[in-house]
Image: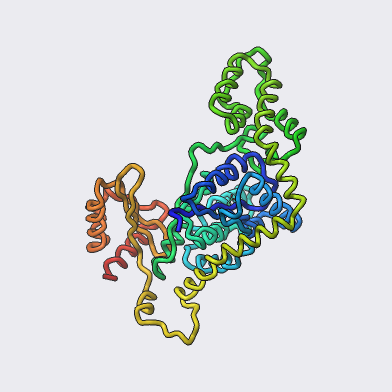
Length: 431
Ligand code: TRP
């Protein structure tokens, strides 16, 4: 088996744009060529239902995104490339995870909180127009990831919280039912740019400031010409800081090309000329893929066949795994007697300590309750033994140990002190 499993999904809610290409499609395709990586790429069409209630748009977007990935060089023979809704084990797992994640954790999800804040400041009911689907979004995403026990999930910063929640779900489930899931990690690619859009804000469907990845050449040229710039005249030196045009160029150009444009800015290149340079550079990278893309769009049967073959591969993993998970939680063949050992693991769920090492080389631990909610967070220790000693004190003395460890522990401010005490009590009782 390969050493690492990468997994990434794109919600099928729109037409892919240059931001998706630079931020997700291009790096994913590069990753997929790494022989040590087993990768999973999927079209998150169940996620799309959360935002979109136009069936034709979902279908069209699924076709366009699949064609984009293939045109950009994803090889469905090397990777597992599928459509989420072709793998029924994913929604099935979603329910199992729903039952181990705290509702309070989901209350804190950024997307849900943003909707609630918006309603509240508009004087509406906090949950006005918020579907339960939006609320559950992170659980479905957790199922996407845990279904295949992906180690690494390359995502943008806005998705880190979702990965953290998937880790929590993995821990909570493992705690109750035994080690089934690998807690995934977000892989933030430092050299992958967040592309600004036409108006200089992040390129995003929701800002309506995107450049479609496979816009025809003429349209691409027009759109690039419409990127905001300041009003400096030809001959006047221009600033690369804060120039959306420059940032977009940088995401496509080599270091030398970028340096040359930087110099041209200093020398006072006219905005019209700079835009021409940017357009030609992007078109050079996109044009060959555009051909492949158009050919694929005209052959939906081919894409459908590729996706179904991908789903069959995905289910070779998902179906047996789901069988083990069903058994683990007690959805079982009645003829098979539960062993007494298995019955024992069904005892009251306890809080747990998690130990880990951070990039700074130090050793940390945290206390989570049975729902995966963070209760206490330690500072960094120089050795695992020192971290272990503090854990030992908490396990044996419970609440009484808190005062002595005050400088080493940070209670989660969002949790009642009472809940932390209860957890520590449970900890000592259960020994
Ligand atoms: N939430 C992701 C997005 O909006 C899409 C997504 C769904 C995803 N499931 C996933 C990404 C699992 C990575 C892993 O872009």
